Length: 92
Image 1: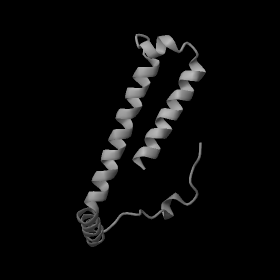
Image 2 (image 1 turned 120 degrees about the vertical axis):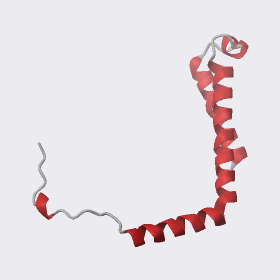
Image 3 (image 1 turned 90 degrees about the vertical axis):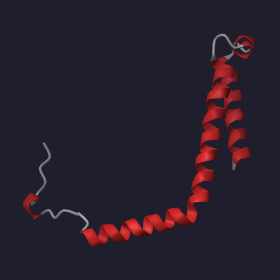
Image 4 (image 1 turned 90 degrees about the horizontal axis):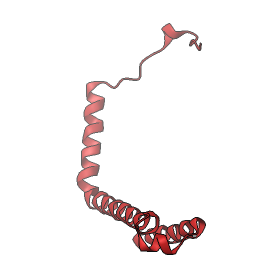
């Protein structure tokens, strides 16, 4: 068992109320100033996730005609990588 040496000397890194107020005001100002960028980033992440589950379903669901036509799993993985890489390039 690991026991910290001089455990009684350990000081907590807690913030005081004025420090928390300053941190909160800085975060609030950044959010107010940069919300369009945060929104765009969230939207792009959402598009990437939609792309991921769409391509996965098309390529890997057993009832998918593409899955049935491509019996080679490494080929499907290659196509998945190309699809997701293309999605990332298109979004970025």
